[in-house]
Image (cartoon, rainbow, N blue to C red; front, side, top):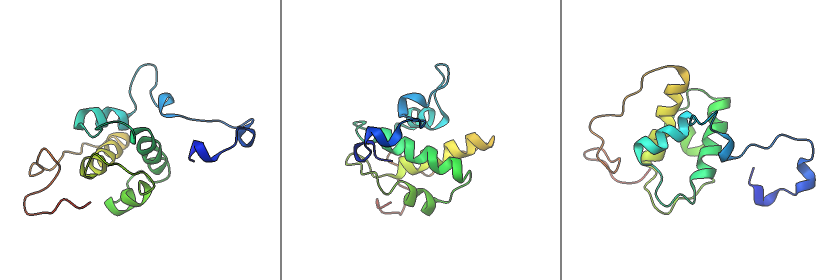
Length: 121
């Protein structure tokens, strides 16, 4: 939920989770860890919303497809990136959380664009 759209009285007695609460005993959540590793955050303004939306997605769907990830993150606008790294981060973190090894394709450039592809996400 967007915190700016929720009145405080609506959450009395309910659990509230924020991006600061994703880490566990000073260990980053797999999404946070992969964001750092992949350099997916630019200015950081959109990162909390993306992380929380991605966390919710992975709680309800442990193995989302790329279109499902795009849909889940569609409410978060990032003006700094082309979204490719962000989508890859969610895929990698999902694999981590399932206990699988997921390796980035070797043909992905620094900017997340594969040879012969455009920059649209």
